[in-house]
Length: 377
Image 1 (cartoon, rainbow, N blue to C red):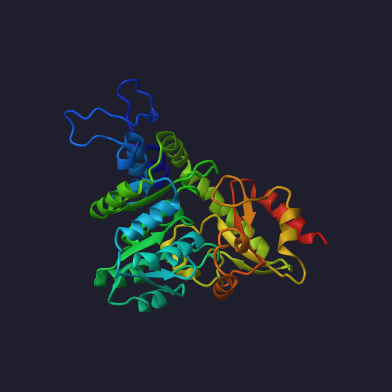
Image 2 (cartoon, helix red, strand yellow):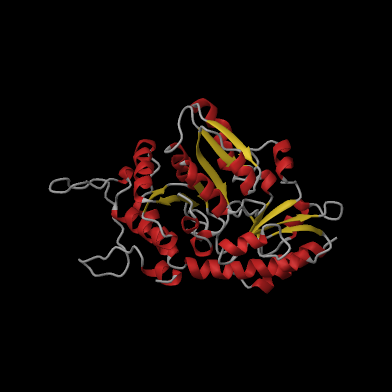
């Protein structure tokens, strides 16, 4: 099945009692245990609503199995800790999502896990590995600079050395990029973003091989980051329109990136779909489209970023991303606020950088809003 069909049909639980076409919401936290191999329980990550969502995402990503979590960070942290422990070493990219970066700097030392941050290119990531490296964590495109890394090169390097690779595929979504096909071991999504897509749920998922999913699930049962049945239902409902939403968002983002690139008060536009963007050719080789996220840097001599945001009439200043509505934020004070100013400066996150999560509105309306905000004196 093609992506559009998978979004609608894969994973759905067929209700033989009412013959309804939607997966029922199984609200029970207590199930009968006699005459069954495994008793469902929400914290065991094996209830019907959890399974339905996992099967759909696995179909979209080409995975054998996965685990559904209550947040993207629960998915990422559990996936890492399932394969790295005391005495081990983890390689992480500089430009990882701020929450993942903070998880490493705040917790790894206490857990006895060594770690190194590498520049966002395959050569640097591979060079950072040591004899003790058990996990490599990458992200492509990155949050918020939209940098692209050669996924195949990192995956091949790690596979030869028995290192488990994990990628944050949130920005791309399963519609635009499938890292398992490129050799990655585990794909993580913050489902709060594109998978949920309506800015109303919080969830995460890790999908992989059946064997590795078993290790992730075993640790997850101890940590307890499970998702309730009603949120599972909302997520499954949202996934049915994922391909439609992401397709429109990707088209809109490309138009907006092209518009911003020619504006006098915009110093730089970060979007993999622009032909002169560093990494464009790599993105072209591993992505089906370039996604609905972009960032741009204002010329602070002409226009203050905080003032620009307040001038917008249609686009909403808000945290998170991936919803049907277009939102904007300054990463320096939101997603990457936990990083030190020096660290943000080192990797290129300036105070004038704005991250745009492009929605499904009419692209012309969004461009008009950006233009009037840029023009105001």
